Image 1 (tube, one colour):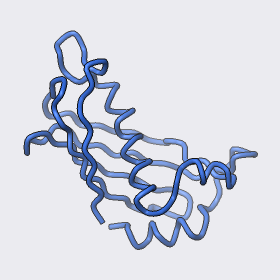
Image 2 (image 1 turned 60 degrees about the vertical axis):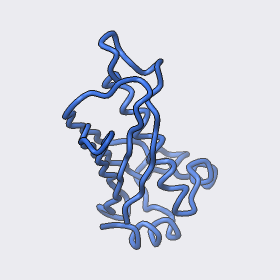
Image 3 (image 1 turned 60 degrees about the horizontal axis):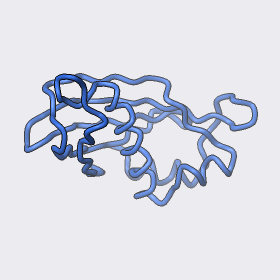
Image 4 (image 1 turned 90 degrees about the vertical axis):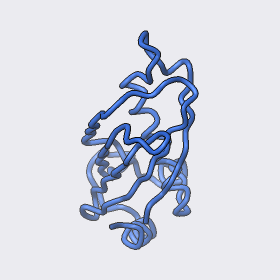
Length: 133
């Protein structure tokens, strides 16, 4: 499954060169992950309330070219279920059909109270398996 999500570059996220600052991609990728999970019927807030957290364990971004304020970024994201504890979101980021960046964000499921790795909830695992590539 490919999840598509568009975000417009905000002026406050640009740098002195009037390009989207590299650090803003981290925040944008978080928005995309949350919306991906929502599209599968899971709210991140709901996961937290049921005792699970999904912290980032690895983040990699390969930048190809910059984008300016007000351009629309399209995120085409896939999820890979690495195990019952880890998952990876792979995003291809483009603007006006040009590749802007490629990103991989790995997350681990942990227990909210003990902060120890744990198996994801079975309902989440089931939808991730069906959405996984």
